Length: 280
Image (cartoon, rainbow, N blue to C red; front, side, top):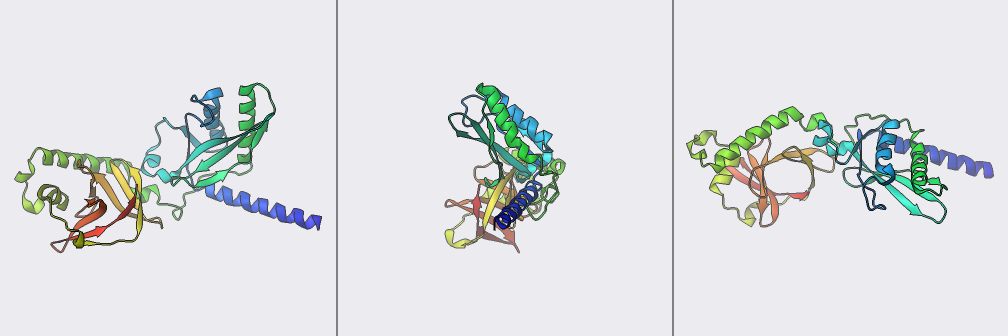
């Protein structure tokens, strides 16, 4: 009976370890905060700097919160795991655990607690953290792109192309503000320009309801709106006006109507409006 219980526990540990490893392999970067909540100053005892060093040691690409991130991490925040260290206060031991959360704030992985009995604070915290990090040594972490987990960076937008498009949009907005749009031929005007200039009257009864919730993920110059699949439904950029976004690749804008996010789009020479449930 005892042997059977030992085998069951062993199998469960293997399963949990395998699940954690597969989950972590979906993520490319780790971001370490400059300060942990249980301290009043940043990087006390160099614990945050040590965290970054140890993440890199065990195969992750780690960055401090205030460091510049790679382009694909800026575009696709879901490639990032946000790190935290949790302290359990005891009388004679320092106990620390490492927690990793995804872009939605969900906990992906938490290590068992690392402990230290050293009396000197800096040595105790450093040893407890190193002991907690030892749990990564057997996981053989290696980033593997998983398109089913969240949209790949390539599927969202290339950084260079997005910057060119954003600059182009900025120039168009400057023209609008300078009242030079009147010189542009009506046939060449985009629906975004028409909506901003003419201020089309929108009535609540014109809006079709949409029950699907979209989640906003920040990109350069705007957001990508993804559903639960997750699939990129809209890529939107700032227009220069409050609560008005330009939709990439479509004759449409997303704006607020009576407090409700709405997509207004010209189809067959008619404006179609649909309510959106967006979580920023």
